[in-house]
Every structure is written in structure tokens, then in C-alpha cells.
Length: 223
Image 1 (spheres, rainbow, N blue to C red):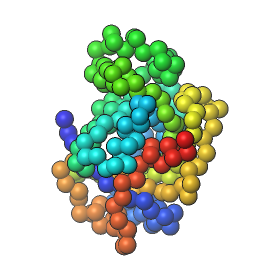
Image 2: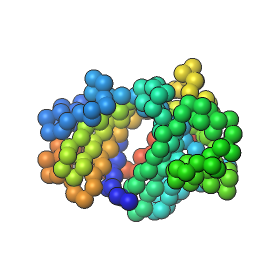
Image 3: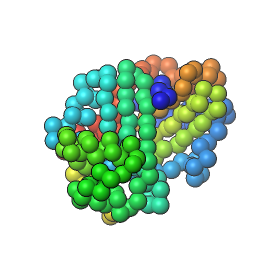
Image 4: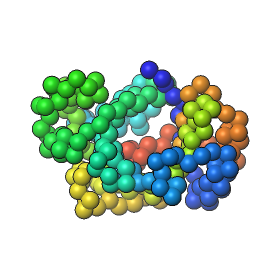
């Protein structure tokens, strides 16, 4: 299990323009990006008491959440992801789902998951049965990803964040999303054992501080 360092910083549109130019000089675009970016759609899950949301807002050091994610509306590649956070470090495990499996989960038909040999699916199934996890909100946004091999470093610029409010029809392209209030841009930096100096220097922004911004929490504020 490889835990990764992760920091997030809420930035202005002007900051994003500056960082985009800097990062293009010292890092490479992610190979999956089209014209330097891609659209992400995520479906987040929580229990009836909104445990994941409350733990995030309360700053709990050890927490876990599940989401289903696709890129550029491509239903041929859908991921179920488990994110685990411990004292500022993050670990993510994931597995592929078919559109049929995704729709079954959204509809509450999860019995098939019990027969799976995949640990991510089984873990998700256990949480659904024991804690009543259910789909809560869709989060859409645009990501501009950059990678740097030393330190397994990844820097992303996320913007145009939208929420579906109460709609959870994940595979339906007609499920409309709306911009969140003041729709901020987010600088996100991830690395393994060390953050290379060249990247550290490139992302410096005077007067900015590390924040605990959560797209999931921001989009749930519209419930």
C-alpha cells in the first residue's frame, strides 16, 4: 500500500493562468488528456447520516469514501474508487465497472457484488450493507493534469466545478449539473516520498495557503 502526500489549494482564475504556463515548462501533460485536459464526472456515496461529509468537514484524520468515476463521458472505462485518508496522506484503490453494473448499483440492486472476488467491490458492498451507503451527488469538472516522473509527482488544475444537486442518474448525459457558488479553481499536488524542487518552485503562489477544499463537500451544500 503506497500512501501519497496530497495538498489542495483554492486559487483564482488568474493564478491558474500563471500556473498553467509554468507547469507546461517543467512537466508533461498526462497522456490521457485531450488538448491538455479532460472532463471528470464522479458519483459520490455516503450513508444516511452523511458520515463521509461530516468527517471531512470536521477534519477527521482517518476517513474513507467511495465514488464512481468516468472521463469525457466515455462509458467504456468506468472506475469504482475507494479513497482512504490518514493524517494528510492518501491511498486510492480502484476497479473497473460496466455500465450495467453501475446502473444496478444506482438502482439499489447490489446482491451480485457479494459474489465478486474484487476487494474494492467487496469492500463497497460491505459498506452498503452495513452502513447503508447510497448515491448522493454527481460532481462534474474540468481537469488539466501534469506529471513528472521523479517523486511520481502529479499536479492538476481543476475548474468549472458543477453539482447535480439531488440527481444521481450518473450515466444519463441529460442529468443536468449547475456551477457551484463562486466556482473556484483548485490546484492539487500529489507525490510519493518527495516533492521535486523544480515542481515546488513552479507551484509557489505568494499569499496563498493550503486548504482542505473538498469538491464533494462543496457540491453537497446544495442539498
